Image 1 (cartoon, one colour):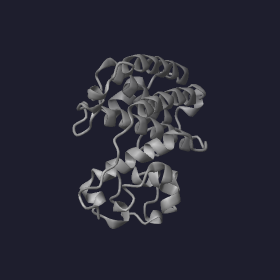
Image 2: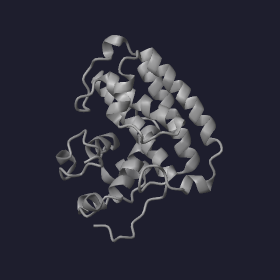
Image 3: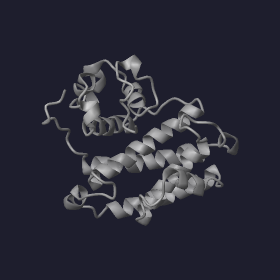
Length: 223
């Protein structure tokens, strides 16, 4: 169990911003390479096809740059984009990414640490959450299409977000099997725990087998 003083460093501003830009560009390339026949594939996101996962992520990026993030639910974002082709959605994602890059160029430390539209998260943590969301949903699409997961920089950044979310979860961090993991730097996670980073991220986000990793069923940052 954590002693109440356990902390993780907050997200680094430049690294997190560049990470989100990279994830958004990677997502645009992923969906832009798809055929319309791929669009109807079922995903591990209950009730969502590939087109819905793509629509949510693109819709979220559009809301972000329009200053309306939080005004639509994921289902509403997905529904609004559902009739668009992979090429069209990829173009919208590229455009939103370019706009976001211009907007964040003026962020200073005070803005980074200020509250975000998401209750309980700073702006920096909110952008970290968007990075996590883009990586995970890209992985959902890869899984649906039988593609290998992306083992690049987005994976440890997502792990870092997941560990931070579990640290803020009193139910999760009260469990010794979880508490011991929460202060481990993401880049040393597999070496210190023996667990595969991707497997842990899937388990802790409700996408993988928690029991196989010795985690309780209620360990899920989205529960």
